[in-house]
Image (tube, rainbow, N blue to C red; front, side, top):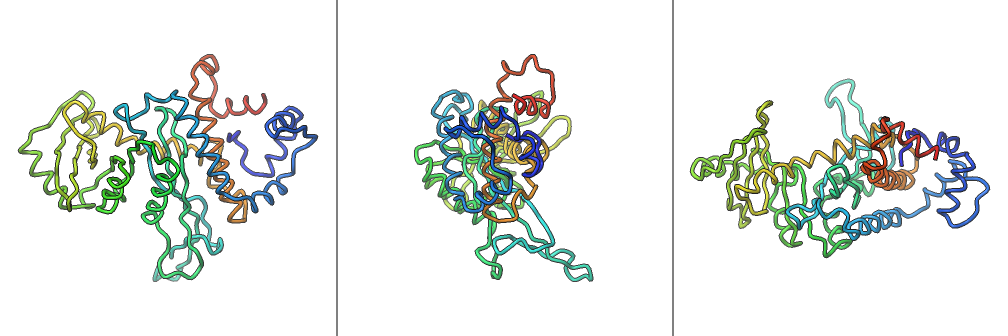
Length: 351
């Protein structure tokens, strides 16, 4: 869990407590007299395989799904909604090593400089309206410093999707993502894996789809006006052999328009639910990355100057956030505790 501790050095001080030492000893299956100092832990994480921590994440998610406690979260009672998105972890003008990505800033000016950064691609599964947890992680990284073409999110998504199929071959999945993934290759890959998808769609992503949609929606007249917004849809748009359905949603107050492409069957009865699930893509940003950056997990902090150590810290944050979300969503536990998230985390640490 986060506990609002912003550095490894602070962890050594905060955890230097008899109760904490005793509880961690129970988890480790042995009696501990003291905890390793933060530098010792970091040295260990530099050598520890990230694959092992990824296995822990997968096993935890597998147990949560098999518990059948979150069946109501399934889309249309069948598909587990998995959101894919990426975020920047740390950036600096100092070279972060051969695996980091880099970009040129203020090109062609006297102030031109190179910025180095770490970037991660995350797949999170929706277990509840208040719970969306990491199921698989992929780091976007260069194999070496001098490269003609850097690693990118699209290539990382291909690798992540392949691993996801290997780890959860029988899981019925509906992938959700932004317009970056709206492409022929992505559509075919989902069909090959027998997955469904709902993707945010921008008119410039695949112009031919939007052109046909604008013509057909006037003919088919599927428009629905509801108190919260206006819904419209067109089914069966052909794009290079793929049958694409388009869903449109416009908010009443802000007049914001959202378009989605999907291969889920669309009818007047389920168009609202489909649009709402499409908008859940923002959960990975607002309740995932932003929570980990601003609500006590310090995701952007560089907990280790070693690349391997940094990756392992990232996985530990995902495990902690998974546990915290389930505890925080347990209303019976907190209904009488009128405190902030930070105060709740401190209570748990003190216990």
